[in-house]
Image (tube, rainbow, N blue to C red):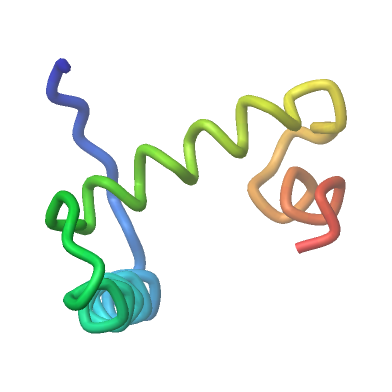
Length: 69
């Protein structure tokens, strides 16, 4: 894996941290690898790339709107 820096809003950081903690609490009894914020970011990038053909726009808001976000 290679390092890539991204800037996130504070609300995104908070929600990502909360989700990571929630998922790790849910899987404690099942074992497996420890999930991190970076794990979820990689999953989000994979999801975005899988929807590349649906992306339209030249601004963040337009791109989000094209994905119904």
